[in-house]
Image 1 (tube, rainbow, N blue to C red):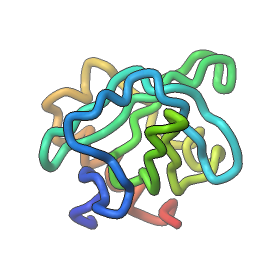
Image 2 (image 1 turned 90 degrees about the vertical axis):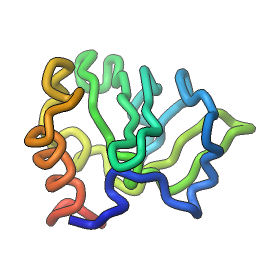
Image 3 (image 1 turned 180 degrees about the vertical axis):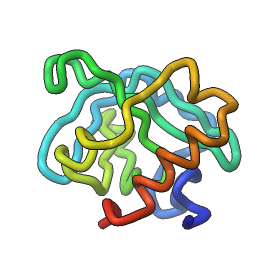
Length: 117
């Protein structure tokens, strides 16, 4: 697994300490929703995206390494995955995602594996 899947890329333009809640999230082929919450924890940074009606109100967990660019002026986060790749990701589990290494390994493996661009 690539070390960066759970860390923000230096080139993404994310400023540590910035509140990303409410930012729009854009996949490579269109909008997927808005940031519901995020973490900057070293080694487990992520955003949780509320997809709204796109996938029937489902939330998705995206490791910070999927973020290609943060546009603070436009309040938009761009990720380097397609809508289909995100839709097919392991389902977000609020109970498992905090402190569950197996769950993070599963999600990280999906985004760092054959579904990686």
